[in-house]
Structure formats: structure tokens, C-alpha cells
Length: 292
Image (cartoon, rainbow, N blue to C red; front, side, top):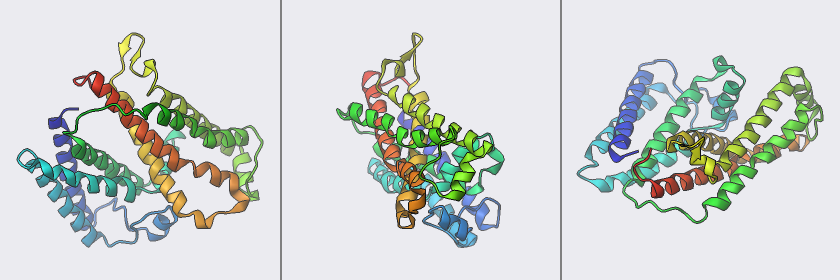
């Protein structure tokens, strides 16, 4: 993606976020920071905020982002502001509800996706835009650690998939009585099977980041963004949920050790997948700078 497109996308995102902030300040729907109890339970950093001042702050930051993008052509050093923006948008604002929403979509239950999760997905998209802004101008190099990190990112999902496959097959272990009953029901077994297949399938697709079929398939080049965008999205979702799980480690329940162990995989899985995706992007950029 060229510099002009990245700036246009980031500027548009910032302007739209400013509008959303004004809507929330005026009492509009979808404000993502007001449900303190639910947000705290899902690991949110910000919760129980007043829509009026918070919405105005969001609007002001959106306007500032729009102005900053407009000034980049004359003051390229301003791009460094993209890094703190990306950290906040990618690592601080999303929480466990983002992964929960992905699970609901996998189960074809989009009506159960929370408005806060939609807002978090929007913030994460902005984080990617600002990270791209900050990174632009650096020479593309293919990191030597790309292959081992990708192999690790492909293997880690098994720590999540294997227990759930066993639960789906009727062999629950490491769970308390209530959770055992939940995963042993027909709906529970179906859900665990879907989650196990999704994790294992994701690990398999991750291997494409270092295999030939990740570059060319059926004789045709694989568009770089076709691999990068979904992999980056999954990495963000997993990392956000993983940070939430590790922050709540003090609430660890020994009776549910198998569920906890599988969920603690999210953070290293998300981080390694993000690094593997970046390494793939860099390698493809070095090989064919003009190819999208």
C-alpha cells in the first residue's frame, strides 16, 4: 500500500472517529465505555466513563489526528506520533469482548455481538493505520527470525485446539462441574468443535506465511493484503484477549485449569502471529515493492 493511500485511510479514520465522538457526546448510541461491570469483567482498561466529556475528548483527538495527517507531507517527523497512538488503540482499548465477538460470528450469531466490540474493532483498525503511518519511510528488510517465529505462531494454536477437540469428542477434563456440563451439551460440543477447528485451521494457514503457496497458489500470485489483513486482524484480537487473561491471572481457578491454560495461549499466539505477519509483509515488499 503506497504512502498516499495510507495517509488517506488514516485521515478518513480520524475524521470518522471525531464524528463518532460528537455523536457519543450528544448521547447517541454505541458508546463503548459506559458499562462498568461488564467492561471490568472482560478486562477493559477504561470503563464507567461519562459519554459527554469522553466523547468530546475522542472528537478532539480525531480532529488532531486529521490535522496531523494533513501536515505529514511538510513535517514528516510527525509520523512518530503514530506509535503511541497505535499502542493505545491496539493494546489498551480492545478487551476480551473483541474475541468473544469473533466467536459469535464463527457460530453465525452476529446479533449477539456487543456494540463495544464493534467500537473496539474500529479502534484496532485505526491502530493499524497509525502504525503504518509511523512505519512508512523505513527501508523494507526481511527479518531473519521470520521463519522460526512463524513456526511458533503455527504451533501455539494447538495448545488451545487440542483440549477443545477432546471436550467436543466427549472427553472433558480439567473443568469444574458447571463448565463440564456446559461443554458436554450438544450446543457446547458443537461450539468447542468449531473453536478447535478454527484454531487448528488458523495454525495451518499461518504456515502459508513461509510456504510457497502463501506467495503463489494455482499459478497465480497471492495478493499480499489478502494474507496480511486477516492475519493482522486475528493477531490484534488474540493479543487484546490475551492481555486481558494474563491481567486476571490472580483469579485463576484450579478447578478450571484446562480452560485457563488454553486461554493463556492467546497472548503469545497473538504476538507471534503479529510478528510473523509483519515478517511476511516485509519479505513480500522486498521481493516485489509495487505488488499489493
